[in-house]
Length: 113
Length: 111
Image (tube, rainbow over all chains, first blue to last red; front, side):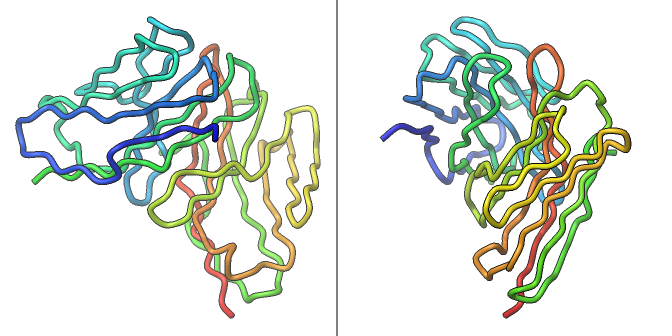
């Protein structure tokens, strides 16, 4: 089955620790995206990548880092520099720029304890 | 504030029509989308409309686009309890084809 998979579904982190969220897709999509969702707010773009080995900052990139070494994978690291990391994180992918549809994963809920 | 604005909450009775409204700001947006999110889940694309269209119908869903007023609406006919969810309006803009989302409208369907 083709799709986009995020893991884990729930993640707990101690303050001061880095943590990496996984996003894998087998849809052969070129573009991948990371969004953050907070209650009562729309999704905000953290980072996006249009092609392997290239990525751009979104609107709220501070405290986050990404890599795109493989087409299928776009992991997001939430660093200790992110002041308020507790949120629901959503990964998405789409064909090359201009395509109509982005497919979303099921999300990872990160809680800092 | 949000560049894409939506009302926060809508309550309807089962069988009635629901209309969810959205306003956006970027007149150069090429595509506008409606996504549905059920509790604890990712977003599911419901429908989209290209900016040179003014209406699109897909089974129970009708999308209306008023490009002059930058207003988008989603009408759900014969609303069912399974339609209860958060509905996000989004526009695709910019060189990077970023999707910019509204804050979402919570639709509650009463039986």
